[in-house]
Image (cartoon, rainbow, N blue to C red):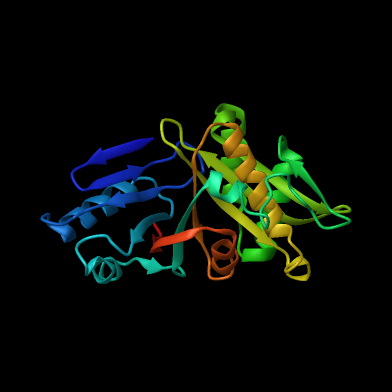
Length: 239
């Protein structure tokens, strides 16, 4: 559920999905009062939540205010975008996916596939990604046209996984995940999964791709033709 109020766009998921502030512009508002109100609103959920801060957000000292309010920053990411038609015209990113020998790409359609996505994320990024699995399961069942996921397999082993979200009523689709296990990096697996998801977005009529890219994936995406618009930092607050 999306909730809007002056200076804030807030996402409150019905399941174990993402909760947090997806957009803000607090210029001219009492930023500390707005932050306190959000803490009170999300505190009723009893779950971790995130304030997604972009480098262009106002006021300029918002990160310091969030830290003072008890938020903890995750690593900085790059906000990247690309026009799919531009990617399709590049010889290094054909939308007809080219996977390394000995691998195959499988669409995620059931619980077994979701478990593979979670397993890859746990190995690549560390931590427990079961909440992503629960949210993906719910989205595939309730709103299958809003999301798709895929796993790259090497034999019986999942080596890369990622998701794409389709934002209806806009020209944008967004990429999430895409992590590759350490011993398969540098072989084109990540690039192939980007191409697969770009092709899905193009087929669904979307014009642009957006991704919050880690330090590892930013150089690859830049080489493929993505442009960086800003940086973004997830500020997390636990209940």
